Image 1 (cartoon, rainbow, N blue to C red):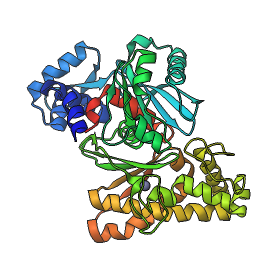
Image 2: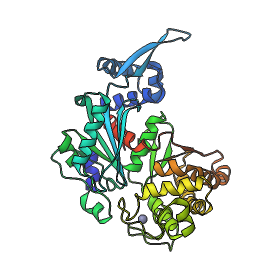
Image 3: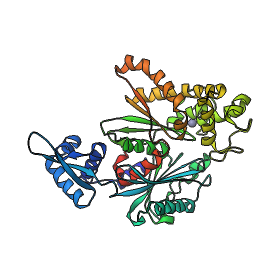
Image 4: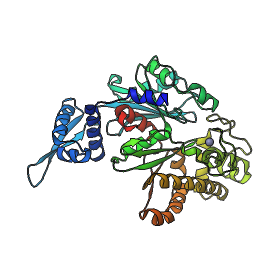
Length: 414
Ligand SMILES: [Zn+2]
């Protein structure tokens, strides 16, 4: 708890800062907007909106963009200048680093994916950031910082803003779990930039919120599948902390999970479990072109494989082409995942579920319908309304974009 209190204390924002963020977020979600519309969307007074908008215009973050015809006085419309503030987002999974350069509307200015060590060094990541910025033609001095997201980064509940000189956030606990340590502080030292570290699923949820231009009134869950399974929940325009969707128990007496519990969703039905089952089944292994019988090793460094995410994508490709054994494995996994998704919807009373991450990008044709089938009957009975399940339009980059978004708009995180 001490850790939570400390990090919350470090991020106390003034009322003026909150008004700024609320106004920028309202414009991002629904631009162009008039000052009157911003006041309605944020609950701020028109005087407060006028004063803050004037400052934002002076700083070049917001621009006036014509007038809306109204019955009375015409209203000046406002939008964000996409390139006024930029940040880098980095997403690590299974030996691949995805880098994006994002402006304050969530559009990707430049992107790069490159192989890195299973536990990448700060120098490897810093080199990627240099290549990204050089390729974009943007002056690195204009970059507000780096958001870093990855599987298991950081251990709940502590996402910290790591400045050069601070100790690394995550090391020992994650090393025990076979996950890479958080290289936030080292990356800050290597680049001289602020580095913010966030869990991949929370970052993906924030990325979806930005890219899909959702407003704060829309509560939703972003289910994320990379080499593991996670979920980020956004309520009232803020991502909630600390969810461990992959460790929902879906089989009371199921196999042990690396987290120490038993029968977790990730251990029973996660991408690693699917790939391991495919290798153990000669028919499925042949369909997907996997080496039979070779068990997946520790995260990111599965012996004899290209990594869990790539192997899972091979199973999904085979299933999509009609291979029956691979399809059966995915459908079994999807049945468990759908039950867990139903629990999230029931617990939090959500009506939107977004599927994101490379795993769902590859296999949403099985998981999307399975979740919909599972949720639909209870919809009518329990909530008297429909739950929408959608597939992200930016599944491969959502975590990186969300991490960059957090650098530009820290209030997106609870
Ligand atoms: Zn677990």
